[in-house]
Length: 119
Image 1 (cartoon, rainbow, N blue to C red):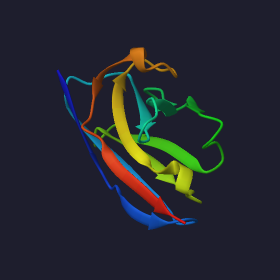
Image 2 (image 1 turned 90 degrees about the horizontal axis):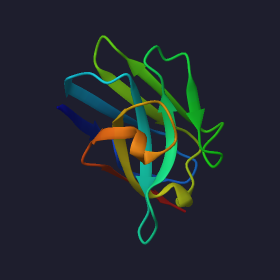
Image 3 (image 1 turned 120 degrees about the vertical axis):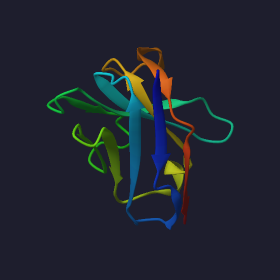
């Protein structure tokens, strides 16, 4: 069982930056992903990173603005978010499992961190 805890969410203004962290404990998975869910919308893929960190993938909506990274020594994965837009407002979820864009790739999920971007 993997336990994931997100932190770093908050309220920011458009154009600001924010970094989310996801600390993992228990059995380690090979890859991690970030997903988000805005009010009234389905959960959507944001980014994913492989075990080594050598492979990453991003949703088109965040490519060039968000960066996913990981520190295996700390069992922590990060999501650096720059140039935030109001449409980035959502609950962000960290997930552990297999590299990819589908939520079904991931078997363990965190509780979510709220990110609110004001215009």
